[in-house]
Image 1 (cartoon, rainbow, N blue to C red):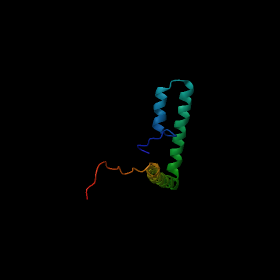
Image 2 (cartoon, rainbow, N blue to C red):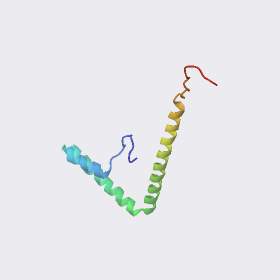
Image 3 (cartoon, rainbow, N blue to C red):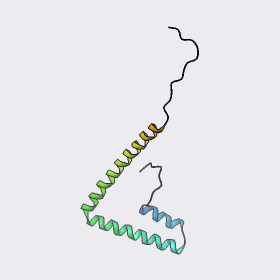
Image 4 (cartoon, helix red, strand yellow):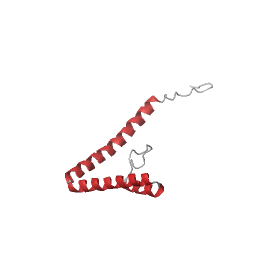
Length: 96
């Protein structure tokens, strides 16, 4: 999804931290702190459970592979849906 045309459904920890510098309301700051604490807890859980981390990494690689394959399928479908170009008839006399 590095160069994807779809919008993300989630922010990274750094993205949330950057939001706190833009949003200055008390509520936004409290929510950002809660989200960052959640990221910290997730990181602690992942470091404690290496097997889970490895599974998540494998899933992520699989999803990235499937993402490329899905794009290829949609491209093929679009090409099939496009009307075929008909050969243009030449005007004039043909010798031969």
